[in-house]
Amino acid sequence: MTVTPRLDVQRLRAAIQDEYAEVAATPEKGFHFHTGRPLAAMLGYDLSATDALPDSVIESFAGVGNPFVFGRLQPGETVVEVGSGAGFDAVLAARQVGPTGRVIGVDMTPAMLDKARANAARLTLSNLEFRQGYAEELPLPDGTADVVISNGVINLSPDKLAVFREIARVLKPGGRVQIADIIVAKAVPEAAKENIDLWTG
Image (cartoon, rainbow, N blue to C red; front, side, top):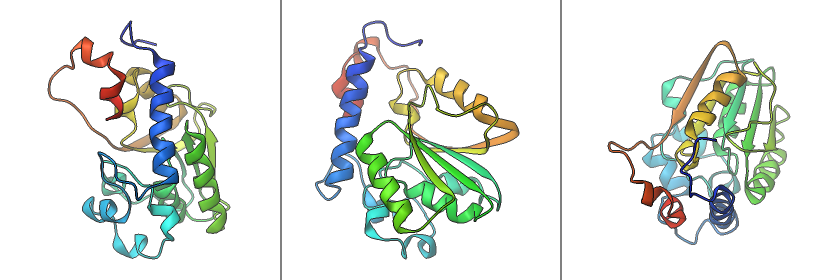
């Protein structure tokens, strides 16, 4: 991986997992980022799609944008979500692609995966599944997806080039990406990249 030499990637991943396990377990706690229904409304999600969702589906949502502003997913498409969290965007995607489509969410945090799987079961979405894995090493074969979506996750990867290589690998020829994320206007100093506290808060 092409990462900052002195960055401990395993410590970074553990710190991110710890933080998002808290978001899964206690979404009402309050974090340095917005969460839940207020955030979805702020980001322009379709209220007709979100209002009817159970609290468990949306309360741990912590995205930074709305990947669906780039276009509605089409019935029958196969969608991969990189960093699916508790499953909010994946649930919306599963409903858009319908029973002939398929959505696969990938996340590295066990607590989020447990919550996402419970949400999919609660909503009886048989076209939705979740797998544990890293954005830099997606647990999927080549050419799986018509569309890759992601929301506020790639900025947390220490090797963003590897993430985009993986996205390209799992896309079918002619596939597309719908990504919402954070970018910086200036290069981040190496010393800051090595500070795990700055990655998580």
